[in-house]
Image (cartoon, rainbow, N blue to C red; front, side):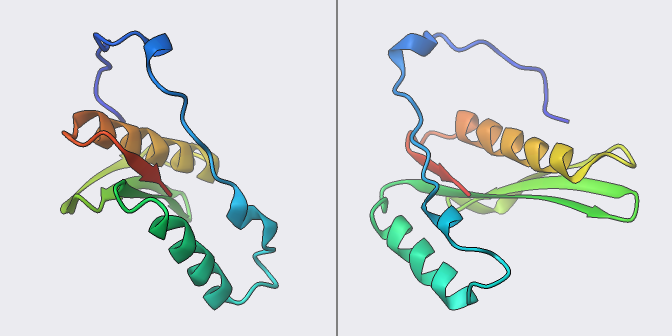
Length: 115
């Protein structure tokens, strides 16, 4: 699980609203060639080259569940955790997003893309 939360000195209303890109959702996973996904991904990332990329994954095998987030700024220092047995894959994915947010919070960088 993510460590105890601390409160930021910056009030949330003074921060910019996160931008969410859902352009990849127009492709149906079961009928889209992986190269189409790759090209669309590269187009997105090329427009945001000054952002640190953080990749997330929640995984479940049998009853074992885990989550991870790895940053392009620190690829050898991923954040990961094992969740309780029988947690849902949705819980694992959410935990991975929380790990990505923690990684961004602890970073000196200020612009991030979470995948």
